[in-house]
Length: 355
Image: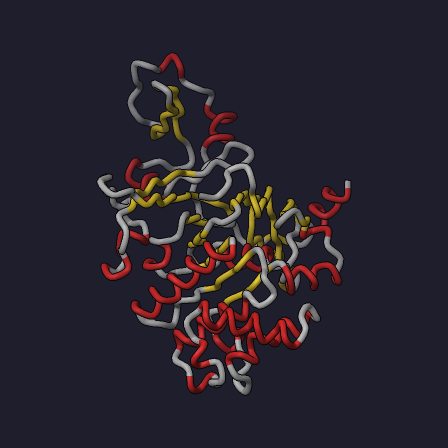
């Protein structure tokens, strides 16, 4: 189990604003996330929710507009260009959905794995050969080490891509839809490779995915909505003799292919509060209860109750909280995201950070 006191990734109040012509598009809106060492985390969310932006920031490919992000003790926002390049080469490995981003077609599998080591000037020729051979053994492709991409299947290419990502012994492995273009059996092989190597090499793995089969097997599924973490679903493998609880209805793991459900597991889904105490209530719950822009908040037996603004009073009405102030802290209305903002917000955030 990961050490609960030893996070590898810490994101605090991350904001990312892209400038498009004279408009500013907000991709991340105060996102908070902690990933422990050794965890295997899936990031899910609708297109445009901010999950790819988050992965690019964690990989050092992009900088946040505001907030703080550290990986293995490094403040990514403060890294100079040379230090950021070194971080990309030595601390993080990438596995992309498109094999054209992972591998060079005119090189063999072994030559592809040795290339990152050559670029980073970290190993001698003998060390490169030995380590590439070890990685090929680890992904089960040593016998195909001299094959080019056209001689490998899609699943084999992705396993070579995993070996390439591990060539410089990173502490963080990032996957962008690594099973998006393969069948179920191949997806299982790729996932097993991720998990086995993660345990053997003490890796922390973050995978952005739309694949319900994959998200049902990682240690934790983090859902992003409108640039913030909305829910977390934690998966706990049951010991023999323990009961099995199914994932929450509608959760991606609930629709996972039977051949990918190997272990009995218990799922716990949580709504995540941000650093200001705000939470994102699932839209379907709001619609079912008829909650719009206003609601009643009351305290109950060890809980907070959210009711429609015109809902019935309860016996605990004397414990009712003030609406406007507490609602702003504890409840975030699930309205569609605002339109892109005009120029000025990005500059204001940068000025605030400089102070």
